[in-house]
Image (cartoon, rainbow, N blue to C red; front, side, top):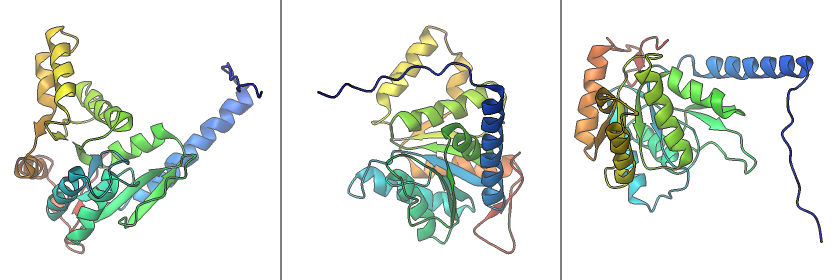
Length: 237
């Protein structure tokens, strides 16, 4: 009977291996910056890769993203299937711009067919940095561990002042009700402050989400590009 593979922590690498790793990471960032530099002002939509087109969440995400794209924002996602595809598809429906940071995984996740441009990234933390770097708002639709990781990364960066107070919209009250209950528990136990509850909006209303993003356009002085009406211009960082 074959024995199960046992893996141990490698421990510290050699200095040369660490140097090569740093160069590898730097090259990943350079590739990402080059690919996404002209994407315009983005709204990042985070959601599950596992929901199919038959899911009501797919249709809602597609509709929401279409309305966001009508404002002139570029829709940015992780570039994969499921609700990421729905978001990029919504932008395509209305002639908006659609970009993705696709993660390279053993199961060979392919970029969805509704992307105008994408970049393949091997490291999750590089991908997450790129998704945050170019975005003026973050929309969280139903998802799993990865989606929650992206949500709390964005909220933590805003909470600690590492990025500006960009809107965070959690879409889907019923799906996220247990998450909201846990956040309320954290508030009660004072592991977060009262003001931290103002860092995000929880809603089922596309109109409410779009109105918040309209205020974002005014707040950060974004202007419509003349050459490409569907894109907003403005330096993010």
